[in-house]
Image (cartoon, rainbow, N blue to C red; front, top):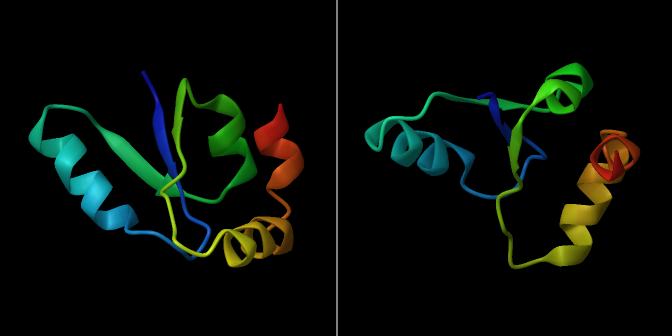
Length: 68
C-alpha cells in the first residue's frame, strides 16, 4: 500500500501523517506527480478556503494528475 498525502501548501498534512503512523500506516507527504500516480491511496487534506486550495492545485499542475 502506498499512501500519499497531497502537499498543496494548505491543510494540516503533518498531523495526518502523524496519526497514520500512530495507527500503523506508512505514508508520505508529496506533490510529486509520479508519487501521486503510483499511489494506491490519496489523501487531500481539507481546507476552509476551497478557492485557494484549487488555485494551489492548479499552480502545482496537479489537477489533471488527480483526475486520473
